[in-house]
Length: 212
Image (tube, rainbow, N blue to C red; front, top):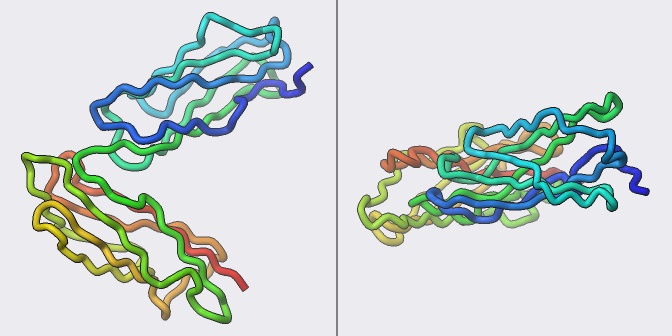
């Protein structure tokens, strides 16, 4: 007998890379201890562009049900930061939450989508000072112009290098050695503003991890 009262088999669902005009459908599994008496009372996606339905083919003998998750065109470009909450009639476990991860790809492609700096209190920056971000324009109709590139929190110095005019750029991102966050783990982002109206601003997440 399964011991999980009511929850997703995994806490996250990996969508992968999806183009902005692409519809993506995935199946996710839920674990339910008492499938006969447990009822799903509501399914609440965090976005109007995400739909979820319960599949009719229930495997109640294994205390499992499957949900079909569909992402439609309309989600913002960049990392997927969405979730799904499923509510039940169980008082002890009234809801289960699923996080969605992946990337919606538009005309502007940025790699990598996250960077990490590891800092030693005694030895300074130990995970390499320089991080490179590559920006590629996939549109054949609109030349890409970078209007502004910045770190709103001021921990990272950014140099923009043009590789191919209107098409490809590299950002050299260096963690400042005279300004560190007080917390042991800090999450920030680099903001890339461009002339593309559909992707006027793209965010690249960074982490600063301090070790003694």
